[in-house]
Amino acid sequence: FILGFVVLVAACSLSQRYKGITKALTISVGLILCHAIGTCWFSVISGEGIWASFVCASLPYLAKDVICVVFADKSAGILKRVYKLDM
Image 1 (cartoon, rainbow, N blue to C red):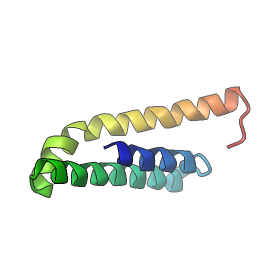
Image 2: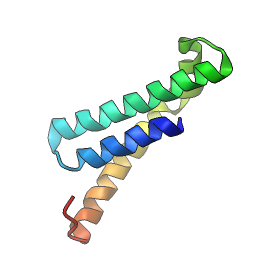
Image 3: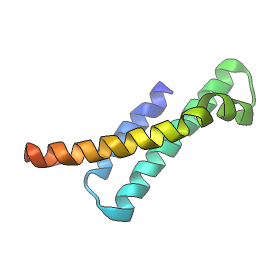
Image 4: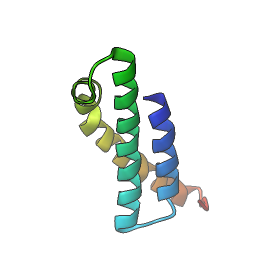
């Protein structure tokens, strides 16, 4: 999943330029790509099919990752205001 997290971080960084639905879509695409890349990689390494890899390596962490991404986005917004950062 490490490669997928690089994509997710890029999407979260990019999302700071937007508001509302565009921001949510940008973050969602990043999270979907992260899990898709991780699932494919797990499938290759384990020799399991895509569905089995998704159920085993991605699905159990999906809800947690959504919560973490929302928390990270809110934290970035607060830090941006506190430190008057221009992202």
